[in-house]
Length: 149
Image (cartoon, rainbow, N blue to C red):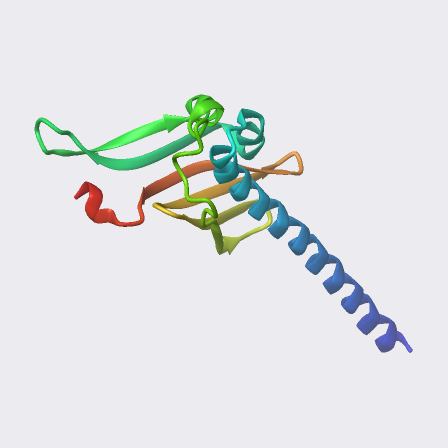
């Protein structure tokens, strides 16, 4: 009888952790989608919901005059301002934009995902603070990296 109770307890604990993982997975996916959809349909509030205030977004760039590569950094504040007007004329994205979220790793309070969105590939780190998943780091490049070689 005790072994039956033990097995049932393990099953219940397993179901609880799966439910939590599913909830976290959905929250992580929604943060990544909020990030890109806030740019598709200008929405600074949606962008702000997705980002940790200390977000740093980076990419490699080439200086036009020297042709030297360097790293460009963007802040959460800038991303929120960008979301306000980036696609106001509906001319930055196709009618049915691509937005694929690929999970690379999920732990109890950190996650790493890859967002493939039309012209961009964004590698994101997310952190769970006070029960909420927020994007804290982004490293991105154009999907066709030859654009900035």
